[in-house]
Image (tube, rainbow, N blue to C red):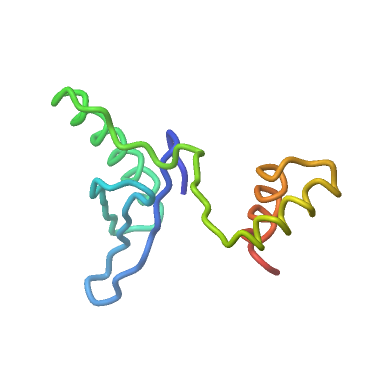
Length: 109
């Protein structure tokens, strides 16, 4: 579930009989719950809006999920292999790794 750049993970608590969720990819703890499936999206959006309003009221910048900058450390040999593979495909190392990461992170059917 996505809203205003934030993503939530939803789970079901069978003991309490509720759906609960939390925002992923940020340090702040932002969560929500709903008693019915049809209310989950509404509660998620309300939680994001409340979080943004709370940050604004306090004069703080809300934690943003993922900057798009990723530090990747590897061995010199792997670095060499990636550079050669990228060059052979006419891509930069960043483009090559990004395409590989996108492919690897896609759900497998």
